[in-house]
Amino acid sequence: MIQSCPAKEAELNILALVGSPRLGGNTNFLVDQALEEAAKLGAQTEKIILSEYTVAPCLGHDDCGSYKSCVQKDDTSWILDKFCEADGVILATPVYYYNVSAQLKAFMDRNYFLYMHNRKSKAKAVGIIVVAESQGIEDTVHTLKRYINESFNVPKDKILELHGYAYELGEAKNDPQLVERAREFGRKMVKSLTEK
Ligand SMILES: Cc1cc2nc3c(=O)[nH]c(=O)nc-3n(C[C@H](O)[C@H](O)[C@H](O)COP(=O)(O)O)c2cc1C
Image: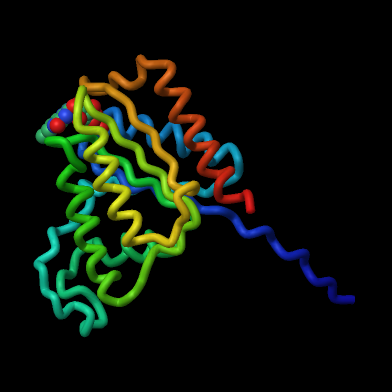
């Protein structure tokens, strides 16, 4: 007798896009803490460090809505596909001159292709991680929230934030409260993706 397999429960996947080029830096460290906690709760996680790929700045063709794919053939298109398909997305950046890093800004601008095709990420929750030495967090969060408003369909209560202060390479590791807030952020990401 043929038995049908029980339906496998769909796994949650969380994609983190990191705008810091410092591999052992504070942003990467905090993202790793959050993703580790999310993985412990069963999420499939992936981290893309944007500086490891070619994500060229938008060239501003206003006619890109009439093209099947962006005229710039670099890594952005497959990253955008993952971004559209992820259940949860984390956008992480150090503060560079009171705003997101150039790496993350280039990625954000390349979303224009999606915008011109009426496409948005299907993510149900979005996380923001911002690290600064001392100032500019508010402006950076503001920029990210405006962008999230354009590129996702998520209610305000599904936008999670983590910000902290750190400067030297790896300094965030020595701030136990910040580390715990990053872990809690990872757990909250999973919670907000699983609760109705
Ligand atoms: C180009 C550049 C610009 C920066 N601008 C600011 C800034 O406007 N405000 C601030 O508080 N820190 C600023 N910083 C410091 C970084 O935000 C801080 O060192 C952060 O911890 C770096 O994160 P990371 O270790 O993940 O790369 C800047 C650093 C660089 C390299």
